[in-house]
Image: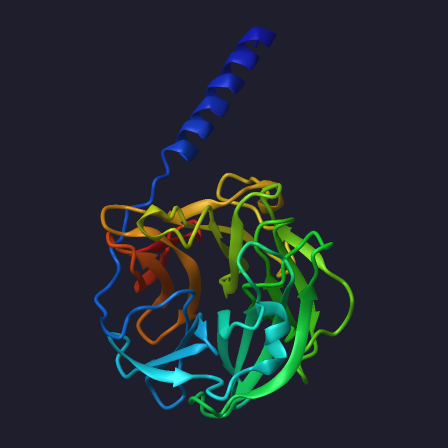
Length: 319
């Protein structure tokens, strides 16, 4: 075969591959039906051992909600009704605490959450635990990691993942140098060493809200691209990549590294659903579940819940 024909065939194959990647446009899925107290921002949901669901989300002293059926939700107070004075050095005195991450392990609830103010990276992530998850039962366990104005990362939006070897990891981050990861001590839930890894980034652009889950042979890193907190003008969207190891490297469906801006979109604005993001995935009896917030046409931030499926190539999709 002549050299020019080989080059032509290679070009055709490459073009076909790019076209196939470009044509991958997952179907939009409207949020599932929810009722009651569904105003949230940055939600995290966990299935309770006795049945029912607990939700924590951004709010004064961390807001809580409960549901018996994953459809009807009611407000359930705050994690720290007496306040959280250990956080105020990072919030300029505000009681508003951000982006909790809930999990249930070892007979108790773990909640990682952040203290900061908008647009700065003087921030901190703290840990609290509770045996019931109810308002007023949460015990402050300490500072996990902080960032200061001279740092190139931002210590907000925490997410705990436990790998197949039982090691604990916390991913976090927003803007700046992107998503970082640290190792935790499973016996305390606090930081175990000084190492810090980079797992995703957009060269200073908008990326935040990491969430790592294991499915099949891969760890999947879900993140939110673009901008939240602008009401119906928000452009948040949910992206994903995967890796065979919990610390990466994570790549998207097209093979682009998430440390180089890669990410495969699975949920974005459509119709009256604006800026869906700050996603959290957990496994329920009927399906894997994706929770997130989105804005309606009048700018109200609401709870979104969808089933999360997996295609034949092992990539997630929302339905």
